[in-house]
Amino acid sequence: MRLSRSGFILIAVSSVTCVLAAVLLFALPPRPITSHADAIATILDRRGIAYERVMTDQVWPAAVNYYAYGPSVYPYSATVSVFLPDGAIAPGSLECTDDRRRCRVTIVRFAIDNEPIPDISSVRPLPWVEWLRQVVQKIRFFGYVTFVSNVLEKYSAGCFVSG
Image 1 (cartoon, rainbow, N blue to C red):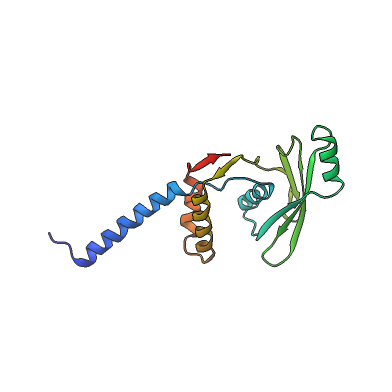
Image 2 (cartoon, one colour):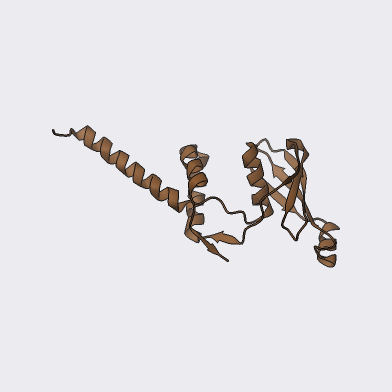
């Protein structure tokens, strides 16, 4: 039996696609949580809330008290600003009981009340993995690989270094 040219091309394209998907599966681990903003973004993503970016800022007197008296006396606290696609800002607050760990966030606009957020990790991604993640984010912006990148983020693991 002889394969036609279009059959051969179909098999070749399918094989290359499977290989690329497997490579991306191992190359794109889940986004590490390296800041409070990342942790809050994780909560917003889980709830399906659309946002552009998340910022946290420690304001006076909370900053002064935290650094003057220490975390055992005065817990870490910060304000949270969630920038929405329509240009609005959803304010909130963040409090941590154990020196920036065991944190809880409150954002009234999204009915998030004192919800625990993931702890910040000391693990940082390798530079090439971070670059590749940024490329995927740009492609995702155009809507080409949203499903594939979501699957890859959910099921991948591995390429991290401690530090």
